[in-house]
Each structure stands twice: as C-alpha cells, then as structure tokens.
Length: 527
Ligand SMILES: Cc1cc2nc3c(=O)[nH]c(=O)nc-3n(C[C@H](O)[C@H](O)[C@H](O)COP(=O)(O)OP(=O)(O)OC[C@H]3O[C@@H](n4cnc5c(N)ncnc54)[C@H](O)[C@@H]3O)c2cc1C
Image (cartoon, rainbow, N blue to C red; front, side, top):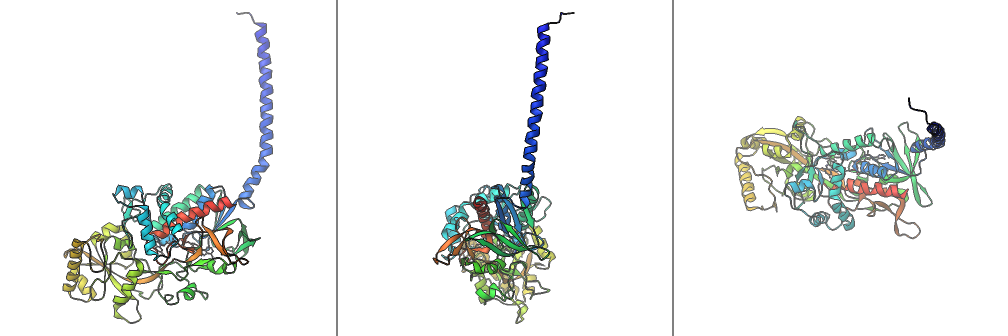
C-alpha cells in the first residue's frame, strides 16, 4: 500500500474548503441576483399590459396595420391593434389580383425586364401628375424589399401577371397549391401575418377586436394615445404613438357619408368594399386640423360581377383585373369590343358608360359589359379561383361560340367577326383601342365562359396627407403652416398622395406593406 503523503492530504482538505466556500458564495450571489431581478422582471411583464414606456397603437387590422405592428414590435415597442370588426383583415383580405414589385426573383425567373424608373413612370402617368413623386419613389424602391418581407413568413409570390396601365408584368400572386386549391392573395397575406403576430409576437402585440376608435388624445400639441370604445361599450384609453391604418370610405352610406360629401355623383354606385369602409377616422379626427389630400378621387373599378339572381345588390364580388390580364375581353350588347381591356381603370369605366347598356336591357339595372373568357384564360388565371366564381353563379360555362351568340341575343357571325378582328390585331401588335398587349387570342372552336360586369366603387385615392416618414401632416392653427404632427403616423388606404387621380392595380397592397412598415418603424423610434 503506498504511504499517505501528508502534504497531499493537507492540500486536498484546503481545496475542498476552498470549493465549498466558492460554491456557497456562488449560490448566495445567484440568490441575490434572482431576488433583486425578480421584482423588475415582474414589473417588465406588467409593463407589457399597462405602462410600458415604448408603446404604439395601431388603428385598423388590415395589411397596413399588421405590417406596421410587426415593424413597431421588431423595433422594440409594445403594440396594441384596435380593430372595430370581429375579425381583422379589412379590404386587404378581399384582394385578389396581386401586389406589384420590381426586380424580384419571380420577375427574373420569368425573364421579365423591368426597372424601378419604368415602374415610377407608370405610376405617375396613371396618377395624371397628381401623385406625390417622393412617395412614389419610396413605393417603387422598396417594392422588392416588401416582397422579401412577405416571403420571410414562408410565402412564395411566384406568379406574375400584367395589369392595366403597367408596361410589363409586375403584379405578384400566389400560384394554386399542389392540390389545385386557389391561394387568394389578400386573405393569405392577412392570415399569415395574423398567425405570426399571434404566435411569435404574442408577448408584444395585443390585438383588440370589436374595439372602435373614438378620438385622438392630444397633449401639448403631441399625440399621446387614443380613446376607443371597447366591446362592452365602455370608453378606454391607450397611450402611445398612434398609427392610423383604418382604410378607405368606398362603402360609406352613413348619415355623414364622405361619398356624398366628396363624390356625390358616384355615391349611388355599387361597391366592392366591405361594410367597415366608412372613413370613420377621417370624420373622428376632423377637429384636429389634419391635412387631407385628393378626397374627391375615388376609383371606380370597371368590373364588379353582376350576380344574375340579384343584379341590384349593392355589394359586388370583384372580377379581378388579373382575369383581363390573363386574356378575357369585354363586349358591349352588340357583341363588339369597345375598349383596350388593359387600359387604366378610369378609362375602361368611362368607355363602359359610353358604350354599354343596362343589364338585360332593363332600365334601372346597372350598365354591363359581357366579359368573355375561354378555358385557356381560366387555366392561366387559376382554374380553382374561377371555380369559386362559377359556384357563385358569377361566371357561366357557355360552351361553343354559337352558344355565346345565343346568350347575348346576337348573330354568331358578329361574335366570330369580333374574335377574328381581335386575332388580326394581336398579329399586328395593336388595335383601334390602343391595345398593344394581347395575353391570348380566341379560336372559333374554343370553349367559352361568360360573365356580366359593372362599374363599382373600389378605392379611395385620397385621405390623410403624410410625409415620406409616414407622419401625418397638420395645419398649425397659429402659423397656418403645414407640419408633421408629433406622435401621429398613417399608412394604407386611409392616406392619400401616392396614387393621384387613378391607382394602378396592385399598388395598394404594396403601399400597405411599404408605408405600413415605415410607419411602424418611425412610431417605435418616436416613442
Ligand atoms: C375586392 C377588392 C379587391 C382588391 N384587390 C386588390 C389587389 O389585388 N391588389 C391591390 O393592390 N389592392 C387591391 N384592393 C385594394 C386593397 O385591398 C386595399 O386598398 C388595401 O388592402 C387597404 O388596406 P388597409 O390596411 O389600408 O385597409 P383595410 O385592409 O381596409 O383595413 C382597415 C381596417 O380598419 C378597420 N377600421 C376602420 N375603421 C375603424 C375604427 N373606427 N376603429 C377601429 N378599426 C377600424 C376596418 O375594420 C379594417 O379592418 C382590393 C380591394 C377590394 C375591395
């Protein structure tokens, strides 16, 4: 047996004592830290709900609101979304044609040559010189980043179509699923962001539905929060910087209708908008001298579907512009084309008013054009989505060209003549109406489908005036000068300035993402 080394025995004892002491000190330090931090941690969690210093209130849960909320949260703010409906989504959830962008991987994969400057020119041209060029620049230069932002949630906007007024295809959509189910663009964007907010951001973003904005809280010339009416009818206050994203007023038939006030001649038209689009916030903030712009610029979309069982219905399903972008054409009651189907919305609408007659020739019915499409157009647009319109009775499977003529009550020779002339024009690359892009032509033995479409109120180009940082502008009562109102931001359809006289299809969803994100970031930094 080896002799015991007394020195070794001694150092082992010292080492044990040393480690015991260090361990004890360590435990004490940990306990001190835990007990001193716990109350702060508790205070932090209660700050999320009650009195966190950096807070942002977003009014409206559409695409602009959700984009703002995500960015504000990512920039360190506690966010409350106030939404008056039972569900978030607004008109954003109804969007069906797509979202514009330039220089995306989807455009590149399809060999589409586009540029930011061409996109800016298309948008400015469509706005008839009324658009704010700085805002349009920001919209265009941030468009690819907006798609990246959306795709960062696992989405793939790989389908690209060309809508009216665009020089090239740049409106991004979702292709159908592998099982052939349609993937509607607006609903998919909203449900994906909602899931992300309710999951990953659940600790910092609070969504209050059935809660209606009442008024801004203003202290010393700054916005410090809002009052809203909760789902029990009580008035509540939330403090923080405010981002207004409450949408437009294209369905405002209230006693204080903004349609009657700004565009009385259009107020009786049907609408594609949901019941929430009543411009509440514009009215509720009227005492705050907020600057408004282009309030009388309300877009009429040429193609709201007529539901044959109720042609006078006030709310219409939209026949998305992308159906025409995929090749559908419009005919008047005589079976003749009368317009470039890919012209601007206001142009197509004006030509319908000039050339079309009331549905079924009955006075009092809305004026209609027949929208003619074939199986090829449907395959291109997405057969599953068209399946929905057919299920609703909005698109009818007619069959042969002779049946089309029968349905329209005209000679088959006229229809054939129209289709042949269209084919010739496509061969030449232009027609008498200025059409230069012909997505598809028609053969006599194609399988045809028919729908009736009518002009419908669709979008408000005007609204709150904002700066390039999405700050709401106010006319200062003392100096009568315009300034950014501290603490107040806005984005989406509640604002005006980007679209001027006429919005290009696909520019609104983009505006929601680009300026929603800017508003969220600036609001978070402000607080
Ligand atoms: C049928 C249809 C199809 C469209 N298709 C396209 C398309 O393909 N591409 C495109 O770019 N654009 C499209 N548009 C336009 C586009 O969808 C909208 O302009 C855009 O989504 C508006 O977004 P937003 O976030 O500003 O407002 P919204 O999405 O309308 O959201 C506003 C929200 O604010 C809420 N709100 C309103 N008032 C209050 C209040 N007082 N208190 C609390 N909450 C309030 C509303 O309930 C609503 O949920 C389409 C529009 C419609 C109607």
